[in-house]
Length: 70
Image (cartoon, rainbow, N blue to C red; front, side):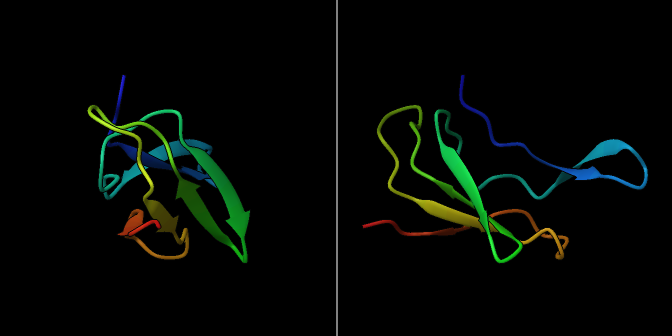
């Protein structure tokens, strides 16, 4: 199943909250944190393998922004 949702955990409130949706629905992607930002790469969309890299900055209200993979 592919999905668009993006959630952020609020440690002070002990709850998850929705942020802007992911730019493309996919599953099987990988993520890592670097310099306080979450990078999501790869995965499978409903029709193909994704080369997209998305960056989520938890300090901003916006969800993951997309970038083109090579």
